[in-house]
Image (cartoon, rainbow, N blue to C red; front, side, top):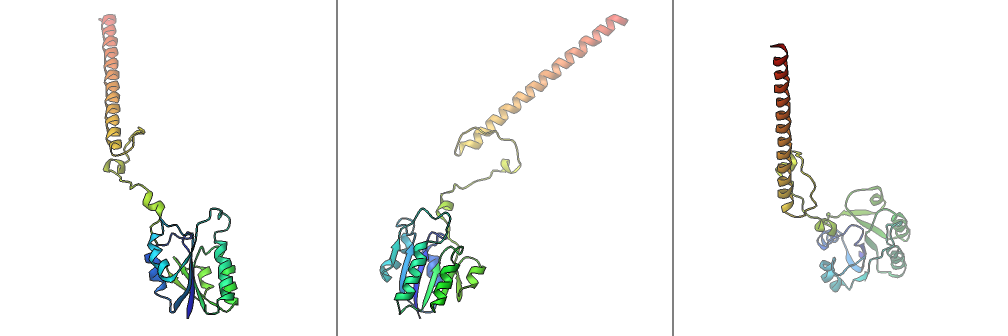
Length: 211
């Protein structure tokens, strides 16, 4: 069985390792392949696959807010099904939302449809079969700073915001907290001294009045 491989890389930030494991599970040969949303920097791990199979690539588009599926992928799938007589089946990776029409069109044209998914869903059940894809780490996840929660923070102790970034932030906040604690204790001592002084004066007045 000859497959047309149509993969939207933007749909789930797919890594080549995950992709390679998926296509190893389908029985057949790759007759055609195209990658949508290809970025040379982010998807460089696909380059050997591209060279080996003469894969076509389509650059990312920025106007996909309302429709999550890449319309180029939909159009290409129908054209290939109608013009490539040697293609018997399709392996598709795309956003499952809005993809039902493409799946149904291919099945009406007599093509087998296998979908790469990350979790079972109603849309996947409309295909002839599906292959589970391993979840890949996204660029956004890699760019996020690693958050280290200190023992002090886990105790929910008060640490004021200082605007200081980096490793010195916690040390600086601890310093400020200690200074605040000293000020508060000083105020308490002053208050106690004032109250004690007032009590002594009151006692002295009473002694003078009655003795």
